[in-house]
Image 1: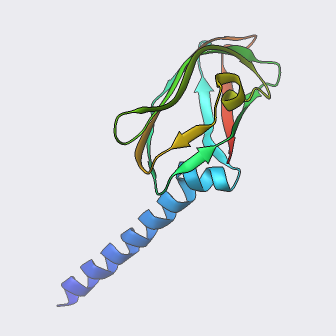
Image 2 (image 1 turned 90 degrees about the vertical axis):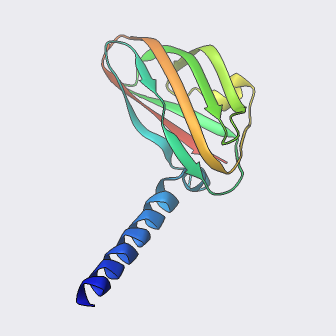
Length: 143
């Protein structure tokens, strides 16, 4: 019986941790709190590719997605950005977008992005980043 109690206690702790992680780091929570969807994307050799899948608890409308590049004078191109909802339908996207610090991806791509609840896939590819071929990119979301 002691082993069963320990197992149940461990499962409860894991469940609480999972809820906290999903609640704190889901795109909806971050958008509502004006945080970062992608805290930091490493640009290496002048390019990057990311494709995370994140759970979304309820519908979210993202009205602003402002780019921050480090170093500040960095520029580059978003070759493609596609957000796909849990039903496999494209919810947002654009291609061939020149960016610099302060570029609003939603405004530049004709948003807003309306995201449905469920497992949401975020795919982004970028290239031509200079003058530093190794840099950092983050996106600040606002609903």
